[in-house]
Image (cartoon, rainbow, N blue to C red; front, side, top):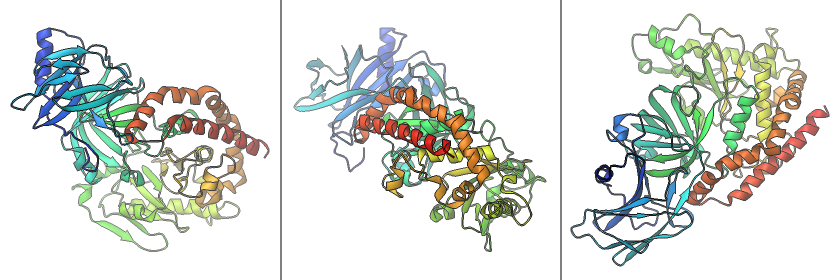
Length: 561
């Protein structure tokens, strides 16, 4: 626990071996749940440990025969009380209370008024909403039990401490990963190649996001197989719903290469971290963006690792940067994943990118080690698009129309979803688009980062506009303003809203949002208690009402054109 938090307890080792031997003696092959109370040097740790024999995963995750999951007691950042924050599937009706001690003479222990001797067990029932009491001689500890929703749980064990990971986003660690379904059914287990922090402003908040890389591509919870995944925290969204709502909207509206996602309760090294959205990582890779992998092609063509090539930076009408990679593939027309990033500090922290003549900073996210020839090609292509976009008639000096460079439907869908959500970052940050190899056009997406939408702008930007369900937002700046000024683009936005998005929003208002809230309610509430967040019910009602009013306003706005 943090030194800044009140606590009378420190984390100490728990004797899992004792629990396994105990289970073996009882000869019970089914799942068993233990409440382990462990003392050492006058300090106490309380952990709930489940051992099970039904997992077919890696031996190192199973203790050769058993799978073990552990949840430590933690103190709430809100009310200061102690809790066991647990996945919903755990059966707490027959819990074995076990008392282990490293102290020379074990102090007398009473649990809910029943004496428990060292190295023995007593069966009990743990109940939600009841204050359970542990008494060690004259010291007393009370704790509560909370359970999340019937959503999957994701369990990580790391080689390095999470304190080390949180010191710097560049820090990584290996370890192991296990995924259980909402009913506790084993879904996946394997080695974790790396875990690292991610995020911009959210990195400095209590709830952080992480990038998870498996040692081999795998499907998690039915999603498309891949090695790299993101645990998206949505630090500012009390409801835990906003990212899921709009990532689903992008996928169901037909926006190509949208990210799949699933809610999970996250546990790392026995500690509860909150309700997260496990998503596919935006990346050029098999099963992700399959647009031609320039990075991979360059690795084959060059005789040294790409990171060994010196970076370059060129000033001029279009400032650009990248790496002086020696050899390029014959076709450099695509395989580009790009991101508009108007926060210059973030732009300057990345190795590859360019700034258009209208001052729009664009990061080249892939290839990671973009060569000079490649960044010159893609910056020129984007600049010709921008030149056409900013012209009154939509044509550049080469006589090419702005829609010769972009896919109309994907950019219109992206525009609409940002407009519906009143996305403060739209057109400014986390604005991804890509150009496939051998394709003459760029495509908008994938969509990303919606925790500050639907009026939840954390007092950033123009709150009067962002917190008002009425009014247009996207037609105010940068490329979005210019796109809206084009009659054919505007007509496509209006068509897609009336034909595709309005029916979907009707479904949300008429029951879809209730389903989202019901699915995630207990996990969001549990996270709220842990994080000390405000009232969940009021926040859910706010989201529902905002979307209802937004639907009605946009229907009137677009139907009247």
